[in-house]
Image 1 (cartoon, rainbow, N blue to C red):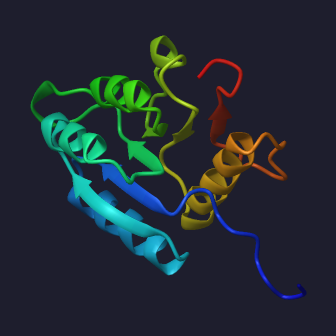
Image 2 (tube, rainbow, N blue to C red):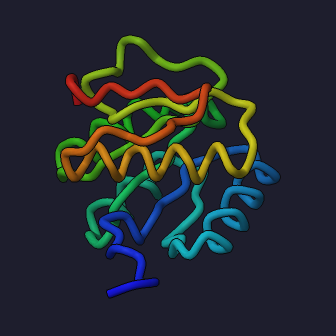
Length: 143
C-alpha cells in the first residue's frame, strides 16, 4: 500500500546513560521519532531488571557509568536475553564487540542517533544499512 511505512522491528528502547542531559536529549529525540522509551536508567542493576522484564527491542548504553559501573555488564545481560544493544560512548569498547551490535561514538547529532537505530534495524532484519552515520561502527558479524 502506498504511503505506508514498513513495520519497525525496533519500537521499545531502553536508555542506559549516567549523564542526565544526554539521557533527556536521547529520550526526546527517540520519542519524536516515534519510538517508545521504556526507561532511562543510570545503574547496571536497574538496566538488568528492565531487560529481564522483557519487551525491549534495543538497549542504548553508555560504556562508562556512574560509580565505576560499566555498560559492558548491561551488554552481557542483554546478550543473554537476546536483546540487541548499541553502545553510545565517547570511546567504543573493542573488548565488547561480541556483546553488542555496534557503537555510536559521542558526540552525535539527533539525526545520527536515529540513523544509527535505522542501521541497526536493517542489520537485525538481514539487510545492508542504507547510509549509516559516520560515527557508527557496526559489529554485525560479531554480535
